[in-house]
Structures are given as structure tokens and as C-alpha cells.
Amino acid sequence: MTKDLNTLLEVAREAAKQAYAPYSGYKVGSAVKCADGSIYSGCNVENASFSLSICAERTAIFKAVSEGKRDFTAIAIYVDSDKIFPPCGACRQVIHEFSPKIPVIYANHHETIESTIAELLPGAFSL
Image 1 (cartoon, rainbow, N blue to C red):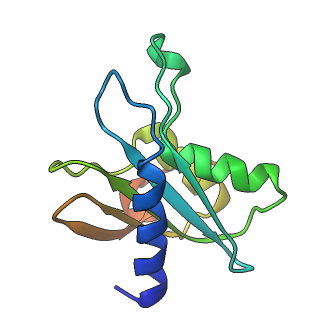
Image 2 (image 1 turned 90 degrees about the horizontal axis):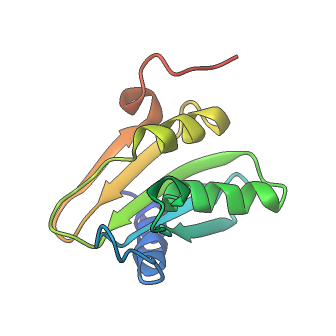
Image 3 (image 1 turned 180 degrees about the vertical axis):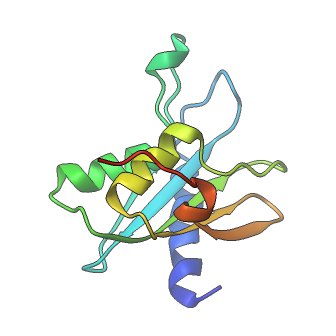
């Protein structure tokens, strides 16, 4: 893994510390790197009405978009767990919407997987 991707993963790991996950117990952080070099992070925020929860990946992307950024070069996801999880389907679609060829790095305590959104979401919905 390159130094840039390792740094991005570390930002995601730090973001996971802010997660609000009283229901699943999985604290997740994400960081998205923009073409201009800026990085936006996010964490998962759960809600008793589960459909109102939001994943770390979408939080990071939506923060960036709300600041006028739409050109992303990489995304990292970290779950504070012994289990490893790729992005959920909703997050995959949102990631693909903005960057259909973006590298996706996801990790846990012991493992790091490098992929692309095209590999994780073949046949993505697009207009």
C-alpha cells in the first residue's frame, strides 16, 4: 500500500473513534481523498430507527460534496473490529456515483484489503 493510502487509512481509523454505534457495536470511520489533495472523514452514526442511520463512507462523501468537492481519488474504510466489512450496497452506489474507478481500501484490526469500486459493484446503476 502506498504512503498516501496508508495516511488515508489512518485518517479513517481516527474517524472511527467518533462513531456513534450503540446498536451494532461496530465503530466505522472513512476518509475520502479529493483530487486537490484535501481529505474529508466521516463516521457511522446509528439511530434507534435503523433506517435513519448513516454509514461512515456516505458521511465522508457528503461532507466533501457539501464543501463543493466532487472529484475523489481514493476512499478508505476502517472498522474497529476483528471482522472486516466491505462497504454496504448503498455506500457502494454512492461511491460509484462520484468516482466509478476509485480505489477502495477497507481494513480492520488485522487485515487490509485493496479493491476498486468497479470490482465491488459490477453493473452499477448509472444514468
